[in-house]
Image: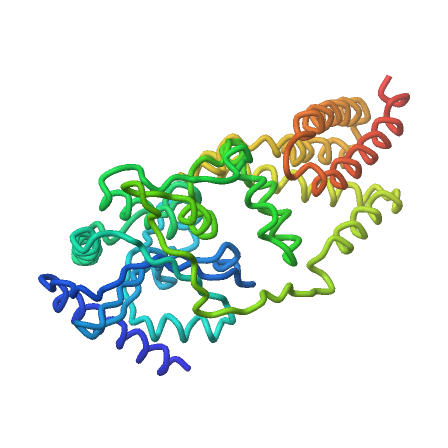
Length: 375
């Protein structure tokens, strides 16, 4: 397996270097076509939202390639830390269309194509620009979940070629980024929950930027350039029906079962473990908010639910300090009420509501058990 992967990587490297050299001064033929490819959703984390590429097909010069802005290297030193911090370098690559098509066939993900109806001069300009990027430091960019990704980079390079802000978002501009993202996690409950609670206020802004592949696809259908449609009607090059995965554990039922167990166990040890887990998650949110360059992780109000102060409550409970156990139970209960009121109009209200109820019940019981003894 490693040998195969090495050969594939080597072939890609050789293809990339030879193609860049070949294409630097290549004039596209009159039959050349430039199109935007939108790839379907997958069930791996990196593929939940689909993918965007730019295809350049030139029968006259006998080549058919796809430019891709969504490449990263798992072998990057400190990969996980760089990704978490938000300074992981993504880069642009070019592949043969045949390899691209075979990869998505293997992954059972659809491919849709929208040909750009632009002049020969603009096709050439876009082609030259893509190749210039591949042969310069502009090939690398710092990935940002909303502002810089495989889709937004394609929008930027096409708009730059067209000389203005031609491609803009047409639909769902009255929805928040959080609301737009929420349905993409169908069949991945804990990913949906995790994403909901780790993101802060930035994703509650109105989603006015194109940042997802199918947003670009839908916008292209409604975009005009020089009083004509910018793109031809979408063609389906490859079609699969996305299979929603089924898991005995990754679903809402295990989530509710665990929380109901916490409520009905009425056990001090279980309560301490529950609050300890929530507080450690909250401490992680606070650290990431300061440590990471990802603006999506900053100003995370979900820390009101996952309050680090719960750990203080647990410590006072362990040391049997009734007065301060009661006080911190009350403080955390107030924070929970504030969080509930703030969350009512948010997309992740219902997915976090069971956690709010569980914490509320346990905190109330903690207050009731220590109220009289704290006086």
